Length: 184
Image (cartoon, rainbow, N blue to C red; front, top):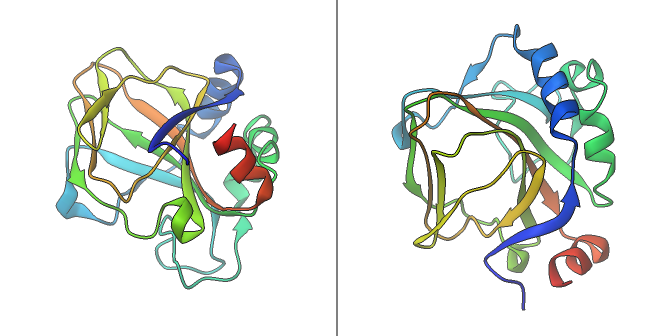
């Protein structure tokens, strides 16, 4: 039985994550496409996407081909982080939640072990006033940590702080390696 939220036994160097983030900060961040479920700044940069997609941050469940973007290839540490995951990677995005911004409670269909696809967050930058709520339970995640959540459950993020919250968000196909990581 896999819990609905789990801190994974993977840790990444916050200073190296933030160095790659600094390298990408001058890029044009794309507003999240689902404008109904957030207030403020929820934007991102695609690191893996469907080639030629008009919405490169969308994790298209029908897609069969995904590739690293030039943004990912221009980074030093992010590719090393992604290589840690010994499972098929689908969409991977760097998602920013601006200070004072809220992602309203919602559900993401088909993102659970039962559906064969899971979402993982690698925390790049955060502050003590960022709250994640999954299925009514509050979590505070730290830079460098790696978290799995069953995002088919009701969830939300609130940034009441004065700095941005940034995560690498990976949509992964469940395989034996990933199942073992979640069950350990």
